[in-house]
Amino acid sequence: MIAIPSGTFWMGSYEDKSEQPIREVTVPAFYIGKYPITQEQYQAVIGINPSRFEGTKSPVEMVSWYDAVQFCQKLSQKTGKKYRLPSEAEWEYACCAKTKYRLPHESEREYVLRTAIRTKYCFGDYKVGDYEDRLKDYAWYNKNSDGRTYPVRMKKPNAWGLHHMHGSVLEWCSDRWHSNYQNAPTDGSSWEIGTDDKRVQRGGSWGSNAVDCRSAKR
Picture (tube, rainbow, N blue to C red):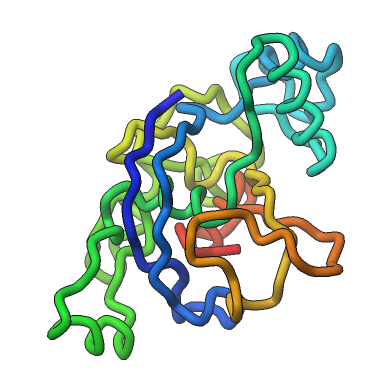
């Protein structure tokens, strides 16, 4: 587990309406797994491996939101420690890893909100056209995955030491799905209010385009 420090960051983007409005979110300190849950780990806790692509050190897949919650609950029972899914705000904050958690000075604030100059991936600023060249060092996605998953230690981590926050397999968050961020919490907590049974997935997967692996993509 990696300790993520508390901080305030800009959550969301202008890339898609579901990622708006952009807003300041303050996230308390928390812990998150260094790697995606592997097939070996999942089978040790749940007793089965539902994955399509076999590989004990590869990330588990074909797991529903309820399966993921059950895994956290059973792991908590086995270890005596509390495990849970991250909130959507925690996930994006952890994914960004120091690239957009600084609050702007007052003179910068309007400029940021008007232009949305922010980093799209965990590796920070990039020039238009070369982000895919950099993304392949951090993620398995549709340009380099050959249509499958791979062991979790094969790509670079972000600045906080977290692997595969982009690509590989989609990652569940605890929040209910909402079509945008209007009235969403700004304290880093899970957005549980609502009637939609769908839940949020983040990060993109081995089959995703680069744009769908962005830190803010939901």
